[in-house]
Image (cartoon, rainbow, N blue to C red):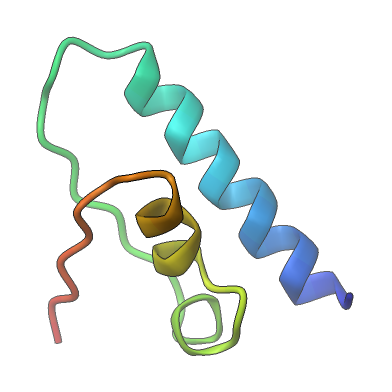
Length: 57
């Protein structure tokens, strides 16, 4: 596991934490390309947790 893998996992976990403590608001999160295309990615981590992730190009 490299640094980017660890960062992506940690960021997905932090976003999950923020969303779990919220009242159902919609969030727009921007991340750099390396956090989206390299597996494990932030979106894949959130999808594994049951979130719906929409990629906007």
